[in-house]
Image (cartoon, rainbow, N blue to C red; front, top):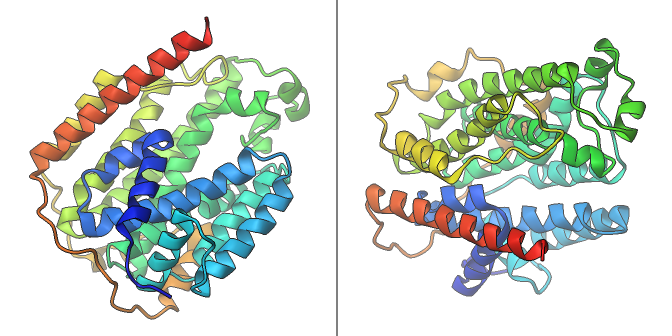
Length: 354
């Protein structure tokens, strides 16, 4: 088993995310290289896992194959694939407990079986697996393992997933998926199956989307405390990711909460303003990490926090030290990235209508 991060594998992972996971790729540009390289490897594996289940025709089989790939990565014998090789190095080098990526695969298996969620806590349990687990793994890459900080990372992951669900209500429905809490629909007099067969936007759906955004915003608020206890060099990148996702909710509100008729997209100019405001703002003066302890964690993420606490850390193998760009330069890189991505999307949309 190698403990080195192969530069070619990391480059392949970065190219994968640049083409499909814009928000994370942009945020990764303002993370220090010692964190962004393993983070790229982690997200590439997670992205490939998500696509294998979400886009494949035999979803249950895809989950089974992913479990085999995970087992090989933890045995130090990854398949001959850049993302798997890099991921194996990350989980070994940063003492990532196996329960975390296993939770992600469990969440993907719930997607494969078309599971629905009766209550908001049920939805939290799903989000804890597909997003909270990733947040916890990211925290370990930043060399933070204190339970109160891992809990806030899980909050951020869950908040982002709730935002995704709120944004994609119509898109999910047209694909036969329903993530809105069923009890909320029934309380509004909406039959879930009937609505899924003919998804329409109305005031009741708007109210449900708003409730989901309120739940996400509460968790974004909790996550802020955790961000301020991360290494100083990591805070701008995580703040950027948090701000960009939270802004999706604000865009939904500007669209009167209609995520059924179309997908809310934050305009490039607004992304620039959000990033600039986030990356150059003065840091909030929070106390030391111990000040987070009295805050309750979501019960649905407790198993992730406990798994980290039960796993002793080891010294991570870091990439060779390189010169880091000043934060102002990195902001320019992010803005330039979004400009190029938006231009590419416009060209693709134009081509699709020819």
